Length: 69
Image (cartoon, rainbow, N blue to C red):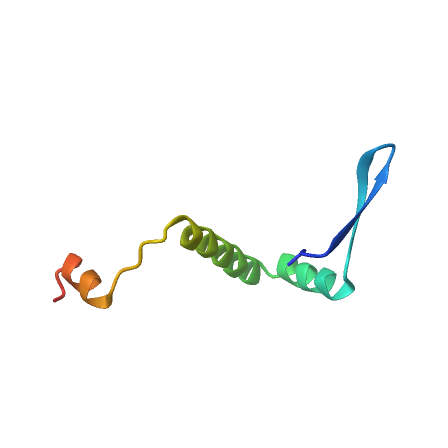
């Protein structure tokens, strides 16, 4: 979302951001529905965590750590 934004400047400072209308509608829908917004923020957080941690665990490793093996 918001990969393609055109910034319009006035007096050397960003004044407006122009986005695709479909993106605008998606953002508006997110902001109007708290549950959708919460889901999207959770998704963004998950993506951030995945990028920060490259370690992956097998199911067997998780079971062992949780004493489920």
